[in-house]
Image (cartoon, rainbow, N blue to C red; front, side, top):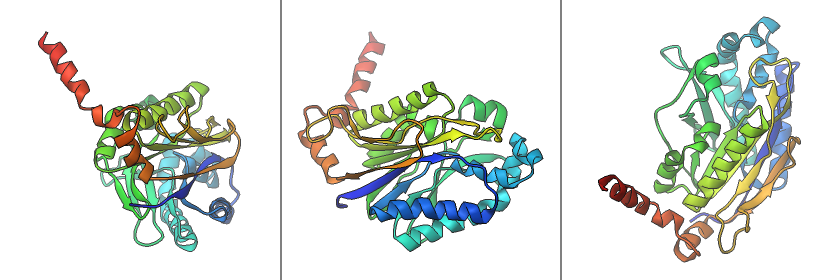
Amino acid sequence: MSTIYRIATAQYNIGRLGSWAEYEAKVRHWVEEAAGFDAKLLVFPEYFSMELASLFPEVVYKSLSGQLDALQDLLPGFRQVFQEQARRHDVHIVAGSYPVRQADGSFRNRAYLFRPEGDPDFQDKLQMTRFENEQWFIVGGDEIKTFDTPLGRIGINICYDSEFPMLARKQVEAGADLIVVPSCTDTTAGYWRVRIGCQARALENQCYVVQSPTVGLASWSEAVDINIGAAAIYTPVDYGFPDNGVLAIGELNATQWVSAEIDPASIGRIRNTGQVFNYRDWPSQFRCLDDARRD
């Protein structure tokens, strides 16, 4: 069983970059700051990597398809800089998401998990939004994963995935006590959809859920021009946890880290001794549905 540790989740400002060196410096600053307050798991947002498109000419970053193609040349460097930071600071990093071209020429929205040692793992986004489907033509993945770490077993729901309960359910049934949710939303309603999804997943699975959003305006970008959100760490709503299920939350649209300590052992305890047993009682809802269908 892993011990108590600190999570840092980013409200990350999409910026316009002048050079690759500037990007590396930005990443180093973010990671060093979180490592400075002893965070062991760092979470970055969905599509936070899209600021790299600003390194290309306007004809590229103003083209939804053009930027996807161009970004493939920067993917090895992106992976390298986060792997180096994970090793240097002895932290685990969920590096938001990056659009990655597949062998058939399609693109998937991929969240990498970088470890202090070893190769990175990844989770592809499974449920695609209308924008991704109809305008960006990014396709969904087909595998729900969990990741073993010294901090415990982790699941990743990328933004819209958090609004579909069976995805997180499969991960917690596979042993994940923590679901991390990199997100990117361009309306207040979109932010609340993901937030409500996160809190619902924490409630019904009696687990921790961590959201990390992009924030700020990037008028130059065709893909991530408006970014609204607040990072947060959500919990079960029961004995020993906050009454509203919010362990920590940032100021809406500010650029900041949000950080708190979590206790993975508390998840097993609350599932066995809580006021309610949402996690345990999950299967009973299907019995009720079966009875209704028979009627």
